[in-house]
Length: 267
Image (cartoon, rainbow, N blue to C red):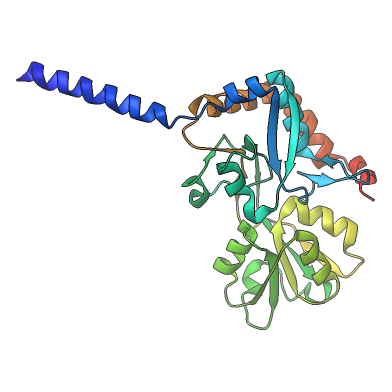
């Protein structure tokens, strides 16, 4: 009886492995065969991905993608994709990997897999200057007398609805639209990721805004791939470790987060 049970377990294991392998994805093999790494991103999130005066997509994620393609020995293709359709586009194979400043959330992780986070950010507040003494944190904004905005479908929107639920809320299709609305006085505060808000404040505040730059959430950003692709996930995690060990990550990080020379390319 014991022997029979062991044989049954072994047989079931083989069946399970066979069933799983049918659904396995081998993106690395597809990339090598194609000779091109296809990266999906929405180029509107400074300094991760944005468009310069020549119409080229540049940014932190772009430089990391270039390094990734070089490590694979293939060419790089950037696939510009609207944010609200970026996960479906990944799932349907429009590109191989999503590199677009996406926050790793448990909800998203139900649908896609994430490599290890590459940066930790949080939500900050662009605020009308007239409220500078009155509002010192997100808690002060949690009042029906304030109108607060963020970008549709982002963790900024989620944080606003969850933590500033009493305020009137307006969602925007793009970050740039939200910033212009607060500069023009249409809303009282704009909630979004700290790196973007910091740059928007330096570029567009026109003396009308203050930036409450202490993040009130902690959000890891990570690259996303389709599920059932353990080899690609392993490769990405090892790639991240390598670029951090050899100083490449630090060099790219400093270029986009500690230097503002790249701003000349978009002004």
